[in-house]
Amino acid sequence: MLSREDSRRLAQLERQLRRDDPEFCARMTSGRLEPPRPKRPSLSLILTAVVIWTAAVILAVLGWWIAAAAAAFFATLVIAVALLRRPPGRPRRITPDQLPPGF
Image (tube, rainbow, N blue to C red):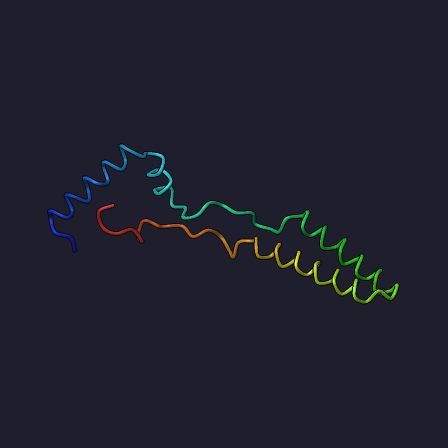
């Protein structure tokens, strides 16, 4: 628990921040912790992986095993990048009950 003096200083800092950087304060009070990210993997990355995998199959049928293995590796790498760029879930939001007293 903050003392009266600390609460007064904190309120003063909050007023000063609201005056100096209102855009930052608006972002903080909107409840969003991080900027929105795309919800699904990029279509261009998926199409690139499909083309590379198709090339890997064709190379394997032709008997070029090393080139087919390399193409399959790169296609898998493209899919991994597409999945890693995807967010783990919805952005976390701050609800009023999670804020400390006095906000």
